Amino acid sequence: MKISTIFPVLVFAFISLNCNRAKEETNLNSEVVVNSDSITKPTKKELPENFEEFNKKFHSDSLFQVSRVDFPIGGKHVSGFEQYNWTRKNWQFQAVPVAENTAIEDYQHSLVKTDTLITEKFWIPDSGFEVERQFKLINNKWFLIYYSDINL
Image (cartoon, rainbow, N blue to C red):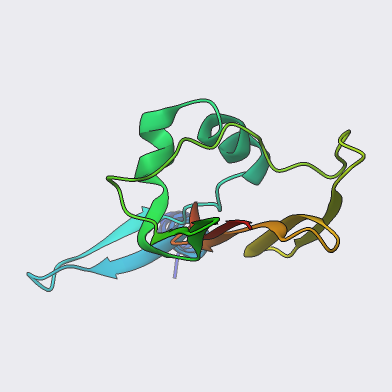
């Protein structure tokens, strides 16, 4: 075989190998989704929503807040003899963001965080007052899944 014939074959092989390598790297960074028509298309993997950004928006935007409460929600409102479960119709806007520390000295406070669940509690010992809320990461978005507001 002549050198003039070997050289184009080597160049073609080199280009083919590099194209396949680039395609494999692209596939590693995307996920194949099968839709109802059985057609596959690559999509970028969605990163989980940042909780701090969600926390700020959730406690400042009432429409966003209602969209991120996973009704029917666990927990309930209890105030004296009044008691009810939370619904969209009786929901009360929550303006106090989740915080590591609280400046209110009368309350006890606990915050437990994992990558997918955040539980915050406020209470006054021996008073009948307790608030607990839980946020859960669902499909890479944060939702309020539990809110208990007890004031006896």
